[in-house]
Length: 320
Image (tube, rainbow, N blue to C red; front, side, top):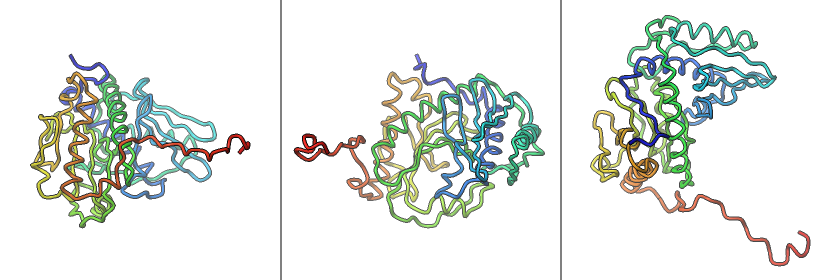
């Protein structure tokens, strides 16, 4: 029996909804992109799981701020501003082009005038949003399951993140690939990335991989890998990485994607899903760090809790 906290998410059952939702997320993500100061490795563009769905977090707009949230419980898109105004639109089956027009109309009603590059990134065929009538599916049940899965993955990946005191990204959802990711850094610069991600400027990719990384995450899949997975990779990939012994035993290295893959169902169906996922995250990181000769003693801590400093003897008696 599957653990009820980790929902079943068969790719074939919701691939059309996934493709549509991906484009909707790209539109919202690009709004955050153009309004937010550039943070290293594109950390300024990402979404975060919430108790209702996924959010942009606050976006600056002059002296105001606003946030856009996909609510996968009530199946709405909500726009809230710092001065108390709000607008909402229903998540339902309708084309990307209609979603685009409705979203910008709602922003206009709030006095928000934003202009984006209205073409998707990181997909092989980039149909401009205002021309995209082919993606028009929305199954609320599977959108809700996707959100529940993100919450569980975020919780476990945050636990994994807590053991690292070097430079490390938040656990965050990148709308380019629609994957939840967390990236650790060795602190050393990396060789220039070759780029080549479809419909993504090479300079963006090269800035993202300017320094050595060990990255992990969750990805819902696509036609080339038609099942959801947890993944892990290193850049640059150290010699011996692809043949490293990682756990659990059913994790494998995929030569096409250049990543270790753990099918999501191996976690979902396990008696202790958290333990299985943490085993994968820790073992793939250890392979990258050891083979890449990272200074693990300086970058890690066994107990993530800060220790309170002891008060000097007599301080309490003296009233300090």
